[in-house]
Length: 351
Image (cartoon, rainbow, N blue to C red):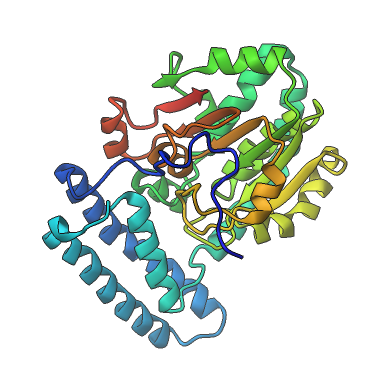
């Protein structure tokens, strides 16, 4: 189906998914071109593992990877040398699109497929423990805990250098991360307004854009959606149509849902609807979403955008015609510097 403008945008004519133009920000261009080229080796390594695990000869998979790497490097180095010749803005979202198009062209459709499965398996049994902890709280304390759970889960991110290394080495722990979150005030801290609204004004329908697999989805996003749904809020769980990095796709969410309800039965009867965003990148351009998402979001009075890609690198300043919150942890030094913050700072923006 043809993509549409997100129905909840306040002014699509002035909306910009990403405001960081690599043609004019020289320091950012150097950082992100270098990062994408280096990070691509990690992606291809995982892609080879996935291919070999499914029966492809390792030399054939490595040959495809070498061809993909060469074309990828050429694309990014060409931009770095000729950035002034590009007529349209080139943003991190542009880089994401270039990367994923080349991966798909060379047959690496979902290099993170097995890693996502392993990470979900590793943490799904902890979901009841997180829910029981939250159920022992009330009011403002409980709401802050579900927000902080999103922050703690969001460190499980293969799209950022520092967190990707820690994730691959098995050194990330949801509960330890939650304990070590920065004290308030956070880098962007509009929690008080968000909490006041949550305590006083019952929303009717929330569109919740999810991010990474593993603890991010299972221990961060799901408990927040449960918190909303148990208060009568209809939740639209919005996930990517196509795979990218370790982000959950809508197909994976649907595949995991019976298991989620098995380990935590309280999810079984909650008003949670799973829909496709129609997109396939870790950032999201809300001018290019699915008709399915728009239909589900028509009566929404709350938007939650979770994750550094969707909520900080893109859409940090997006305006909506209803309440909206961006919740994320910063896992890249360049992004932290741009916001005058530090690595692992957190953002709670509420409008």
